[in-house]
Amino acid sequence: MIALQARTLQVYVFMRVLRMVGYFTLAIAALALLVDFTELSNRTGSLPDYTALRALGISAMRVPFILQVALPFVMLFATIATLIALNRKYELVVARAAGMSAWQFLTPTWAAALIIGLAGTLILNPLAANGFSLAQAIEGSWRGSGTSGLFETREPWLRQGREGGGAFIITAKTVAGQQVSLYEATFLEIGADQRVLARHDADRARLEEGRWVLEAVTTSVARRRPVRTEEMIVPTRLDQEAIRQALVPPEMVPIYSLGRQIEAARSFGVPAAPFSMQYHSLIALPALMVAMAMIAATVSLRFVRFGQSARLIVAGVAAGFLLYVVTALAKSFGGTGAMPPVVAAWLPVVGGILFGIGYLLNHEDG
Image (cartoon, rainbow, N blue to C red):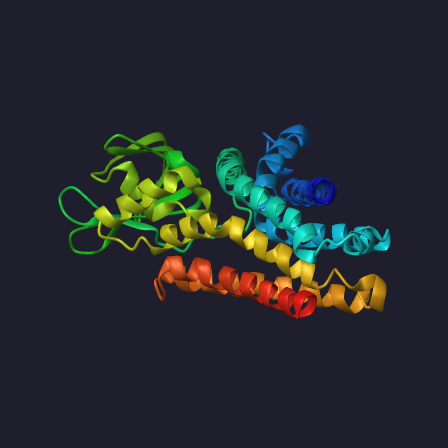
């Protein structure tokens, strides 16, 4: 009978956590949509293709990416809110009086965190990467600024050989995901003597088999008037994988494609650390969610008896923020190759989990 009651309470807590996560997710999604729509309208409202409905659609495509970034904090706040609500209604007090340990009624919160983390890795990440890439492509096609500030590029992006000697140096303001489309692109044509022969500014450059296709191109040559052409072809020997490796940020590659991207980078002899770091970060996301739930539990169990809610809530939020900052710093080190990506991805997460377990063991069983 007691075992049945324990399972019933665990299911109840599990559903409460999921419902609270849903509330926080909807609130953040609505706020992100409103802010992004306002900023996008200010940036592109004067363009001919702009309509409020289209801008709203572009902003909606970017919402999953913002949710993916905010997911650990959603888990932290949702767990804190759930445990506070259970404490204020004395439900946890009754559970303790019935002989249940903290580990029994906290296990459902960790199970919910694990499931939500898996959903974030396997479902939300592909939606975020593909949605953001599509939003970039649409916004770039409007010939606006084409960027949201999330993926600023550092020029030059790419240098490729040129027939007859010399090279093309390729730069652009925006890259749109997996099809390798560049918006507001610039191709600097360098001669064999390393002098600039011409500058080609294109509204869009798309990669096809063995060539770049530049659209709406303005060609500038020294001491001549710029010439406007509708289309220009630039041959290239690089394939899509090589160019994608050089141009596409790791955050815009879905987890299902990261393995191929890492192998492509290694085969071309270029550093694969940024893509490897992104891959291991996504694999570690469910464990990070569990760590956030554990940190929330350390500050949410003793409110009713000691009246320390305000101070402990601030402490819990600060601890969760600190874990997130350490995770981001480790990701930066892993992305540059300063430390192995697998270590950079898992070390902060394991540290957060061990901290939560140690605290709970000391205060609940010690």
